[in-house]
Image 1 (cartoon, rainbow, N blue to C red):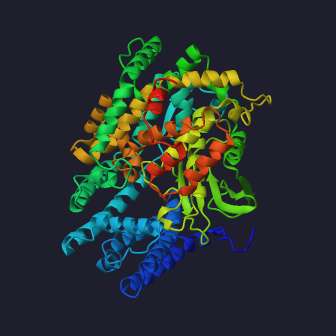
Image 2: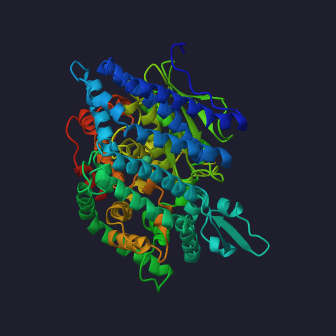
Length: 640
Ligand SMILES: [Zn+2]
């Protein structure tokens, strides 16, 4: 590695170092931004290119402070350090919002002469101008002050909402026979106490096996209810206020509602297009979902003759049971091929071959001893660095997601990104293998796309409803017999048989429409809570879910209080289906050969390596050689 390449970030080795890292380092970056802004506010002697370069310097400085603050707030084992990082996120988000309300800064770009700019400079100038207008710079003094207050309040409320979910671990106790159906290793890890009771927590490592395997309906309902109420009642009032803040903010900024404000910068283009898209999803999934529902209800009634409807707590158990009984796919047999260390090697090996990169383990300090760090290398050149924090612990983010750490700017900073997941240390469910590939899709997008000239367009900084497409695409590799056989090996040393994978694929098509309906329920909730702002959130959410999906919510539960995507995705949870339409279409280019080097290279160069430097619609068209179509998604829903 040559010395001219940007160096990786050096993370602190002890608590004192982390305290400085989350306070002094961002404070230094904020001071840099203040100096840049001072220069930009008397920009008359600067060319437009010079103004853009300065704006980029500030974007990079903010990113270098904001990304690690956000990561640390969700992952550091020390609650005080998490809190300090959260406070810094508030400072930085307020700084960002404040800059877009600053008339002197605005003049530097409103008055800038675009003549002679290169295409990428012109694109950046247009986006900056749009950001200022969306930020409220045109409003009068009182309105700008109100925007500032509301934006700060949005950040505070969003943080509190996430914190309550992160720290809202619940426990239930069930009698030993409530674990009937669960795998032996799970039962061994959950011994009974002196009263003969077993404690289960809402962490994924308990929740997922219980949802999948527990024969006792009371156990399933008790744990899923506890999980639904993870952050309730704390998040009830927070959510109500957040929705009010967003409504007022979007109106002040000249939009009909929050959905319209968010959609304005996404592929979908307008808030009104969201329900139109969701009704298309509704249309193509309704009939298949009814057929699937009749089958799962019949199966539930074999266990529970009095049951008149399938509840969400039954959903995964019934799908798993039918897959075992009717498709000869036994999830317990499947998981025997997925010991965690094998899966980790497999994900690294497969994505490494696909994208022609090597992951070189490096031994450096991180925020917890579980974190594994690798350099991403091609032809001896370091392209970035990744950190994998993959097992649950108290106070850590409790889902699965990719976080930025360093925004990559060509010749200046090396892109770094992090996975925060909650996988068991023993055997993984196949679903979790799929999740692992999904999150790796974000990770490689961030690293390979992290070599842009402008921080504004680096890595996953693309339209936010495109961002799930690369990750959903990569899920498909977890369903390929050859790919799986390269790493999925059981204790007897046997690779997963191709005929088992073939049965898994057939079985996977069953329940797909019901799962899409469940996602439709989330998307409807995310949209309508923001647009309708109901007085009774619990009743409205229950109504949205019942209307979207035949699988019923648990009565009296408050799943919205633990719906973490309501902060970041806001009204736009439709993103997952929108991106999936694109992902299914992208997959057609591989034409059944997922390791085809020529297609993989084209995918890498036309999509991943572009980051956000071009509009997503153009990236997709460049890769496919045609505009994207809905057909592949419809075929996938129909079971092919
Ligand atoms: Zn994702």
